[in-house]
Length: 301
Image 1 (cartoon, rainbow, N blue to C red):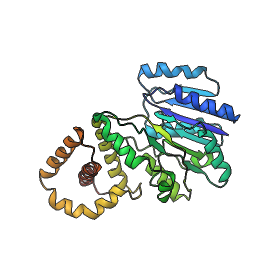
Image 2 (cartoon, one colour):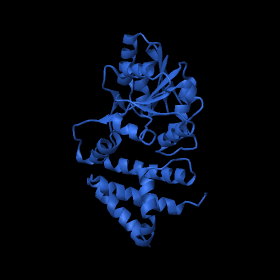
Image 3 (cartoon, rainbow, N blue to C red):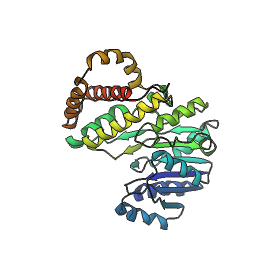
Image 4 (cartoon, rainbow, N blue to C red):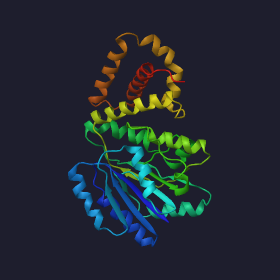
């Protein structure tokens, strides 16, 4: 019936797995939990190895880091059941009906093949050095199911989704994407092109892996490099950032000349790094980074 697939990287997952097993056992559903470690630090691997003793759980470790796309494809190949539930290792199950909610969705939508449950962030404000990620998450990554349904493919994430195994056999993750970011949007775009709808549910997990401002900005910059390449190679659909960039790129080319571009980018980066969590400032910084990346890439279309 259900294969729960968790790509693991530098995060203990014992509590997450125990809760998932508890809910599946209570429902008497046929299931397995497969945790595949993408070459985490030894301390984390030592903690998670306790999973080897747990019934219904498979825990394996890779000898080298393969990346976010390849490990998800590998997990699908290891699965034995007809439905695959993907969960990120830093998610926390906050509903005692989490598995039941997904099973209900399958029964109520017999022709559906993909469900996304969503994400929530803690209501408690973190320290100033983590406020940028927290603010971004609250305002942009945690919309309710009704809001997500208005843009079903664009709001899809890979942190908490259920998919039929036969669909996963046709629509795999693009393993050419090795850097951080936007592999979920490429996957969603493939689903859209191949006619597979995404049903959005109010069945979120709590996101706990907050990055400090520096790491968050570094990851965002890496993801924008990915986005720029994916846009140039036509592997991704429109995003809000790309749509806005199309509207203002002529103006940017006039204003951001010479050293002005890099100086302005550095100024914005410093403001964000030092705790300014104004998302308009963040979006402006992202726009400039994306514009710089677009100029640096050779035209391939």
